[in-house]
Image (tube, rainbow, N blue to C red; front, side, top):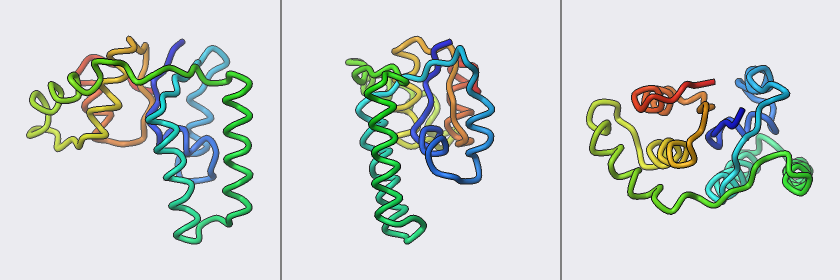
Length: 141
């Protein structure tokens, strides 16, 4: 099953946080997660923010980065480009749902990418993204 998970879902798979156990639980052996350059950039920023906030050490961040890279190298994630029409679709989603759901650019960009990639499911712990994904007919995990 192809799943588009937002970056916070990926972060919870690597860092122990409030959602880590649930993120692991939601993945089945058949689950395949897409990974775009947007995910990689956001994931890196999230890890560095944890170092900045002194929630993890530099050494731990380096270990997480190494593990993430090993998973990428072993093709654990399905690496794809951000779909060409993702930003256009993002704008459309903002017009349709922005004033009602209070979604932000990254919310609509992740959902737009999932829709463009024809994801079977959308993984998130963010309430706005979950509401937006469901409003657009995506099943959430």
